[in-house]
Image: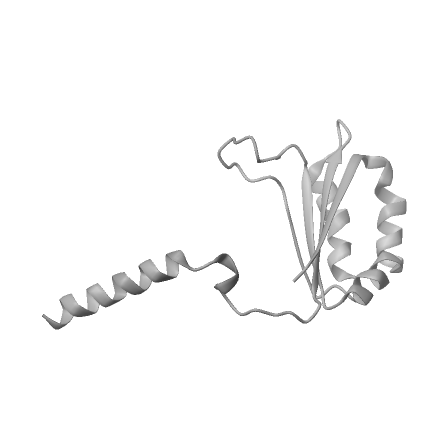
Length: 129
């Protein structure tokens, strides 16, 4: 009887959690932190793995708090999914000022100088968290 009651309680809590808005999941942090996402479309013949090694320097810039990099996932094809890029970088900053400092960081500028002729297009999405 007790295990059945516990199961029903757990089930009802899971149902309630499923109806909560997305913003109620996890810890909310409104401290002005930001995320900088960069998507690269490389020129034909460019080696993605080699480019990824070059781009890894971006995560080592002084003001970058955290960085992730990867290639498109093999998710279900849908009209809203754009997986035409070859490499994406997501960089986390503590503030807009840190992101501005990143833009003129010598490692960032050197990466652009060494590699800008390797991509056809770059798209950036910045947002505050």
